Image (cartoon, rainbow, N blue to C red; front, side, top):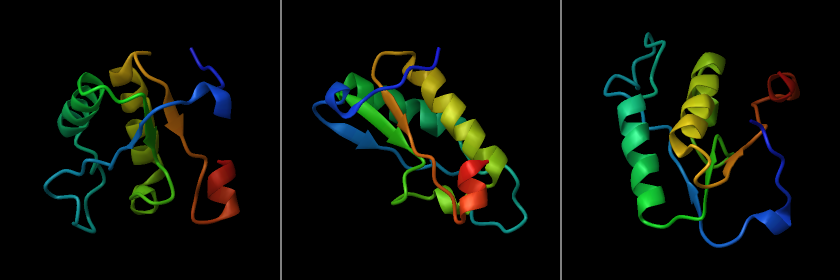
Length: 102
């Protein structure tokens, strides 16, 4: 279920997550660089530690180094792992307007 949140809905500490890259993420030939096991552990740890919300694909992270498919995988996995326990903020960003609108 997708739910829109406003600024009044987000309180406390918001954890900004990295992309949790695979060991081969720096290879220019790699097509799948998001390590879902590391992502799971990071999200679980943040929630277990009491984080109030999570943010992914923000402009200060590695979003610009991910392929479109990797961004979609990262977003879907983060939401699935959080399972509604905390709000997940997903940025609508891109290196150009066409990508952001995609």
